[in-house]
Image (cartoon, rainbow, N blue to C red; front, side, top):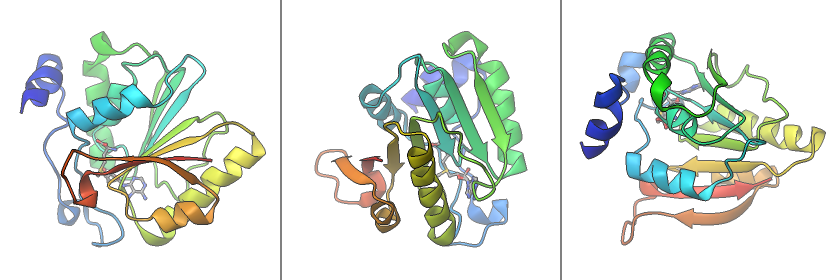
Length: 197
Ligand SMILES: C[S@@+](CC[C@H](N)C(=O)[O-])C[C@H]1O[C@@H](n2cnc3c(N)ncnc32)[C@H](O)[C@@H]1O
């Protein structure tokens, strides 16, 4: 609620209302609900991952754009959000227009596409996934992130919130560098894993 007061209301953005997988027309277990990353969790993430004028941030499953817009408040060279739902993409585009006053990164790309069909740009250095999809979609994305890191050698940081498909990341050679969650919180839905390729 405090986050909404601080970050959504002053700018007239709407990132807070969840949307169920039924409303989005998804098959449960493949794609999940729209649920925005928590404000506090996001701050923890952005305080700990690279954000320099050479870094490029990519949110795969960007929903209404909360993580993209928070990333754009950091000095990234480019910030990209890829969202499969046309409705959520439209809300994200509106939110971007309304956020002009708070962004530092001038290059924000919002793409309405399935992550399965999206070609990972070879300059992405931080890939963010908030448990957007499972199974074969996740495996394909993990494989293509690893291929990109091979094609254009660089350190690629993968931030995986509510991690459910760690095996797919390990299978492509990603190395777990940190796992964090609120103190005393056992549920993995509150974890944030950071991997490196
Ligand atoms: C848990 S929400 C995260 C939203 C946003 N990243 C954030 O942190 O606020 C996951 C999002 O992934 C999207 N999604 C699911 N499958 C997708 C796919 N194959 N390609 C792109 N987006 C997808 C959903 O529509 C939803 O908006």
